[in-house]
Length: 266
Image (cartoon, rainbow, N blue to C red; front, side, top):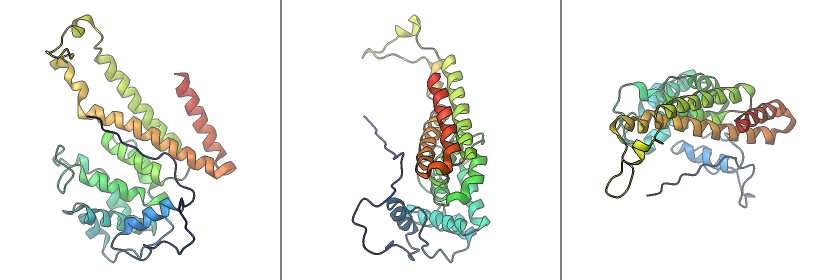
């Protein structure tokens, strides 16, 4: 089985369709706030539309991040994002706390449904990504979280939300470097290129992995790999924004060029 996933590494700068009509058709509609956000993104006009917000208090919306249906969860996340963009510290804190819910002891292997450890971080990640620049400080702090799952989610949200800055670039690169070093250390402990291991195969001729080597496939290691991938993608998106900004972000482009040159030299 092949599983292929694609994520754009550059953002639209203008609509790709005949956009001579009116403005965002989802403006003022709070029942599906993510639609206004998607329209703005596809139009190259991120975060331009206010849907009208939600009259629901932030603490209630935070509880709904774990609602039974995905529609309810996403309404809550994007409503909190809009409140955060308008200055609500409670909304921003609620999303930040939810992003760390994987550490709360909930069932880690449960599917993406209410009550599992996977739901809150994923929904909060989308909410923080839609919160824009206001979410940058807490997301930068989360890049130093001990859980790679939290770091990867924070890096994704930063890539979506952050304006180009040296602080963001260096924070993402530090997270990438830490994860990369961790993988190097792990690889050194599991050298499978030995004559002994090469001769152990099953009936189909496939290599049998010894019991003491199977933890190389541990979900925690997979999460560290994801940190490397997501931070690299986020750096690419930030670089594209810096390039679009021209001379105003020359320092960011220079820093990224230095990082890439150092990595290529390795």
